[in-house]
Image 1: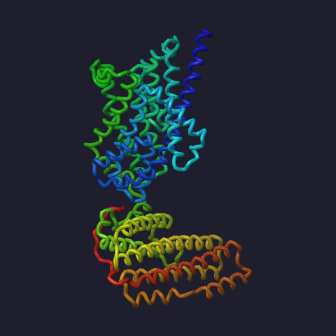
Image 2: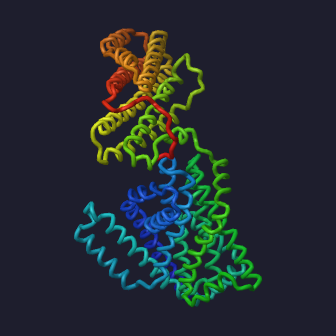
Length: 556
């Protein structure tokens, strides 16, 4: 008995070491391949403009490179919430990204012992000669080390698991587990939620099956549980997301659930009814049990995709009702600019200008919460600010793409003016947000009558100037532009005198004084930026700034 438990301890230590190497490898692969591919992946996914072939290719590449469906989904969430990609067009990418994660599972089914030894040796030499410190190849070398450690860990697991089938207590345990396949399903699900990866759990299952520890039926149920577990883990990881981000997390959960609804009944029919179905088809391939389990993993991803196709429209409508866009996401979605518009520079600049005019109309809303005369029906300022910044960044990217083309004459002048205006818009958004924050801080600190009157006048004056800016930018009327330029003359001496008077007053609390000083400084900055914007409202020859009708496009 003691000898058997000693053997068990040695096996457990070998398996534990193998799992350690395996998970270190997974971490290194995930971190460093993602560093190599993340920016390219974002750019590729951003170009998925409705083509089913493009979505398939992007999903397969993204899943194969990152080996993490969560990585792909959270890239998609960031693109969708930034207004770069439509949620419905992002959903098919998830289908194929799940299939892309099968690459590592397939490779793990092959006997790569010699290649693994060579890979670990080569990366060890590269580390010894400090090649891993080079910025150009650092991530590649560390990803190679991760791949080597992953497969070395699998070799430990396979070799360590082989003696298990000869132990009496393991035979008893496996016979008990075979009577309750629910244990296998829950095991796969729980470990997938913990590890955030169905492919890694599948690979470990393949190694145990190759060692004779588990059979095909047990392995199938573990794979089904692990695959469904990734849908559940995505939902858990995205618990803090709302709106469009939650839509994608729910989509992954429903996608995995559909696959389970198809395959699990087939398994029960085959297992209890004796009708040859999935397991029989896998065994008919003549492949080893490890490769059969790998095929089962791939089959699950394919079935998920096939099951989603007939109900995709209904699922999308359900998600839109269940998790509608948040206020920030709605505000952060461009209305006029879209990717195809860049082909005609003249028309594209008109669309960019109209997008800027739409942002200008929102600027007075920053001050509604701190104005006494506001109706209180405006947007939440934090959502407004984040949404405005997203649109401003989208316009910036749009203009950069236009300027990278061959422009000349009035079109080039127009593009440069719009880019400069966009930078000023960004400064105005930051300044107004900070100003509203300082005024709120002064009021919370209990600003007295003089300080309260000053912050009131600051908010009302700047609000009036922003309305004047809207009129001048919309019409391009020389009189409106001249009025705005006269209103935004230098007021530094006036503001300095006000600050000195407040400093001389001993009635102000320190927190109030600090907030009021901050508000007056931001007011000066706001006027300075407004004046610079006013000077850019004189249109160059051949450019028109009157907002005309436009077709609303898809966000870039």
